Amino acid sequence: LNIFENIYKIEKLREIRAFYGFTRLEPHDPEVLALTQDDRIQTIAETENGERWIPGIEVRGEGIFFKFNDASISNWELEISKNKFNSSMIKSIERYNQARKNMGLEKRDISYKFYLLHTFSHLIIKQLSYECGYSATELRERIYCNTSPNNQMNGVLIYTASGDSEGSYGGLIRQCEPFLLENNIQKAINSSLWCSYDPLCVENDQQGTDGTNIAACYSCSLLPETSCEEGNRLLNRSLICGKIDNREISFFKDFID
Image 1 (cartoon, rainbow, N blue to C red):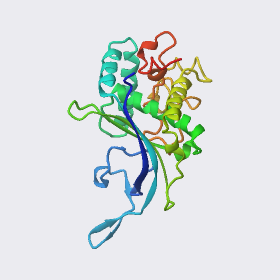
Image 2: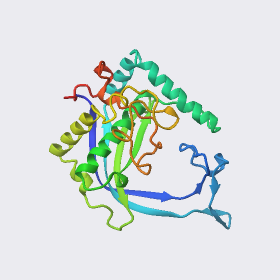
Image 3: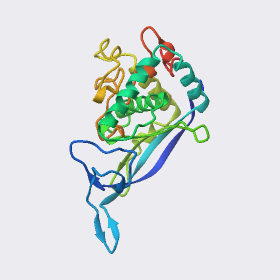
Image 4: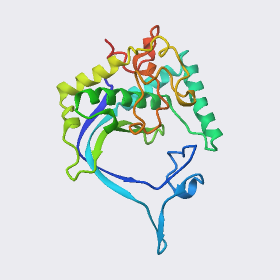
């Protein structure tokens, strides 16, 4: 179906987690990593002989990387940009950037495919948590999304990691077996078809923090805060399952039972 270009089983994964500061009341920009670029971050760095030290830990684990087909993503984005549903997406992105402006942050370019990759990530995490033995709080996401034509990135990394020297226990990569993985993807997509808050959820185009989500609530798409890199924003279940009267906006329309 040309949905995925490849799916990788990552048996050994190493992550460094560093606590470099904190903010009060308002979050910092996740794209700004340098301490000197965001005045609202209170640094906890210790300075010694001109060197800055911050506490950090090394964790090891495992993961699954989903590499989406670049051509399929591009064709889908072109089609959805012409759809009447396009206006809801534009307003959602505008609300997100208005919230950033109110916090003194620069405008961020968000593509439709980011909503798609991010929502798929949440749904597959929920599904894997039922099957792999880890709770949703132990699974994390990393979204690889770039709109540059010379350096396209269309990927999702789902992983778990712990401070134990041996890392995790293999439950997540066990789900990479072909007969299990296909079943998990199918179940994740099918789970998007119905939410216990439907029809209110699926028809709502202004949900969540700052109204940046479309058809996404805790009953269907949201994750624990530690699992989501965007604070449970920029989600759109309709891009996975389509609307009741318009399945064509779904990237996975050929998967839907």
